[in-house]
Image (tube, rainbow, N blue to C red; front, side):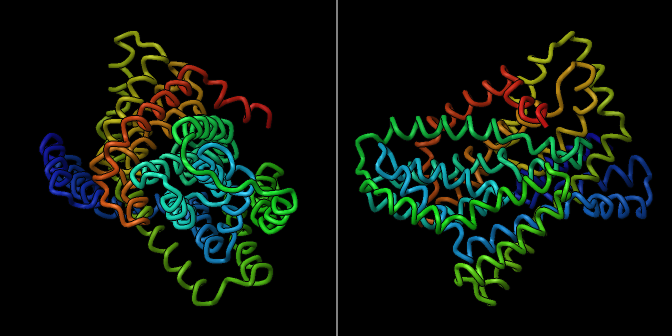
Length: 420
């Protein structure tokens, strides 16, 4: 019955059924027909999965991000980044990377970052001579910073699955900075011959910094509140949303009631997509537990006498393969429940493991056929996604190098949390 369920799930995935239905149908089939689990237990498991207090931070951070876009914060961030680096070689591309990094510090949604920053910068880059396919893939690649720099939905979900404190899983700031620096160097070299923006003088930079100050204060409120022990992750997300509303209405005066309602609707839809996947993927985790799959995987792996390095390389390969046709959240729910028991046996730090997962799963935002990040960026500028595919190999090689760097140097993931 289990083999039949796996085959059924594979068929459903190949005919492009939504991933939550693939998980739900396949897992329910095994639970009912092979394990005889009652319906009440299945429902309680799904409801309990999305009822964790920690997961409240996900919709609240998404909402805060949408309000910051509607209220003018994202535009001020972009203007500040252009004022600082627009005159550099590849300045507008570097500004996009920096703006993505800043925006990552107060919004946990990768797709929201692409839409918010890309809508402002991508058309301007194309007008200044940047090839549209390059711009699209750069936006998708730069958005991977969003999954590393806290607050991050990926970090929140990993914390909920692994019971690692969320303040520690918000440890991706140093790996996020490393990825941003690698992208900046890559863009500066690749786009050195493209037109540059005029150099901003001191007064223009100061004016841009003052205008962006409410946005720059937001990460201090969020992370300072969490690390200072004043807020939980969910409370800090709520405070960020309130601050975004205040800034949009009272400081920038660009936020309207209609825009606020649109932000609520957009955040609700985005949250619904994430939570229905979590609810159905949790059923898969239950099936894995009942069938003893995690322990069997531990025994099989240890029978080969494998090392932490081999384990992480195998996980990286699995993430790359799964990322080509499954989104980030379901991959977390497939891999983490099966492999978590291996970490203490092999001596792999859970935080190092999270950064490796985030790095390689995030590459799925670039790789066809799913490549959700690339499709979103292409939609922003109205470019057929397939036209951007030839640009993927170079960025993929950069991402692969970054992921291997994270595997080989675990201190990049663990240094910051060890100082807390």
